[in-house]
Amino acid sequence: MRFRQTAAYAAELLTICVVDAAYSAAFAQAERPTISAARIEPSQAPSESPAIEDDAPARTPARHGRTHAAREEARMLLERAQGQWRAGHMAESAGLYEEILARYPHDARTGLAALELGRIRMDHLGDLKGAVVSLQRAVRLAPAASFHEDALARLVQANDRLGRRGDCVRARDAYLTRYRDGIHAATVSKACE
Image (cartoon, rainbow, N blue to C red; front, side, top):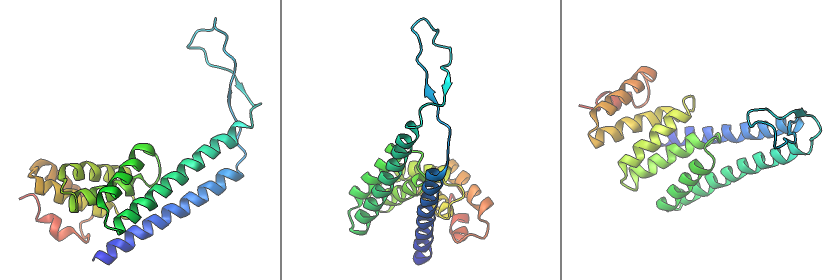
């Protein structure tokens, strides 16, 4: 079962990398009109919109460069976090996942980072309340990801261990509604009692 979960996480990460590369290639090839801020005279009211000009093509590469650089930084942080986890440095790994979530909240990898942070908090750091927060975020950020089922099952388990019956029941019902025949269905159905 552990191999199956690890394979699912690896497949999800590979998918994210492929999508990231495809997005970068598509963005580089796209010809997009640019908008530059027109000069606003002090006498203009703040509610007036600046004019749209098409004379600033130099802004697009800079913006693309920042976007690409941010994606690359998020990817590198994720790799470092995974390396720290493999080396058994759970606190350091958790810190790197937290950094990804704080610095790159809109990156495609945030759902995975939130799940991994929740796993570390739950399994290694003894922080069930922190795990619940991270797992809720993973469930919310990546509803279609291959790891969504595992995140939701862990959310049930963490709430159950904390004695939060209402939260546990809601998470359990959400899991069983979506994954009636899921790999964790037998365990999840017995939770919250």
